[in-house]
Image 1: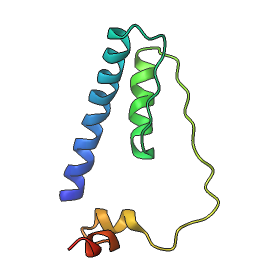
Image 2: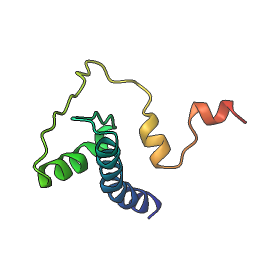
Image 3: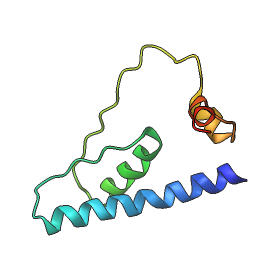
Length: 88
């Protein structure tokens, strides 16, 4: 349930983040702006840009190796990561 709530909130944040960036660009009279986000938010940003008929580009890194330790899954399943263990 906690992870589901997290993702629902993250999806709502997509619209807010894009709107804030868009307003900031208009206020500062910028012709374009760059949004850097994690992979999860890409679809939400693309959806917002398409709805506004705004030009956009998505740049995705080419990942050639998988890290043995899955920090993402540890965080999302509330398991302690090495970082948390070291900060006690």
